[in-house]
Image (cartoon, rainbow, N blue to C red; front, side, top):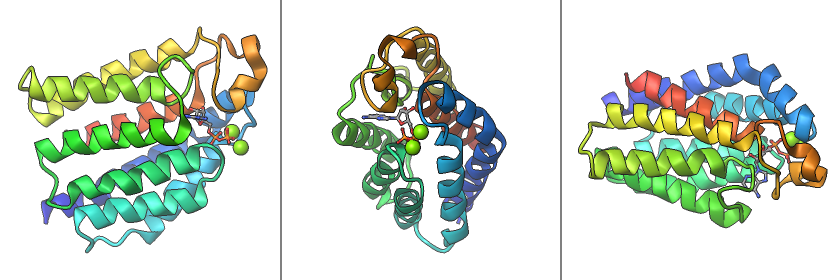
Length: 205
Ligand code: ADP
Ligand code: MG
Ligand code: MG
């Protein structure tokens, strides 16, 4: 059905975007980490795409993508991206609806925070993901926007979240080893989170 096709198209668009941003993400990670974030995600999303079964129902499809990321990305971001996706996928067991998309977004954020122990202000993907999820939820539940308009607002909020990571000092992950020297660089994982959101939005549009 349409949902399966949309999921395959979204995964393909994300894998493509990560491929074209691979060197950029690696540059960002070379400034405050170990220069592998682009390669890590590229390997992971390629594996997720290669292993994707278009006949899976939405929950199984998203879970399989998460498991592929979990086993192939490695580093700190692998369990965060992959494990959280695999767990949050269960919100789609009764299909992808506006309501289940909000539940999925919230479950994903919760898992990332659980597993990584980071909060807003630690200069991680949580700084991008938190405004993304809160803005999406609010746009749907309070402002009564349709999912695409809500996603568009979420993308804008995520961009602000990425910009917020630049002037702050890292207190989680590899970048925290740099202490004050991490100041002045955007966080790679927050940046890749923005790319994912942008592709989800663009495929939905
Ligand atoms: P590694 O740092 O192990 O080389 P990656 O380079 O793939 O892994 O990913 C680095 C990104 O992971 C960081 O930019 C940050 O966004 C994210 N990250 C690292 N540690 C945490 C954490 N504890 N919680 C949330 N995100 C984290
Ligand atoms: Mg790294
Ligand atoms: Mg690494």
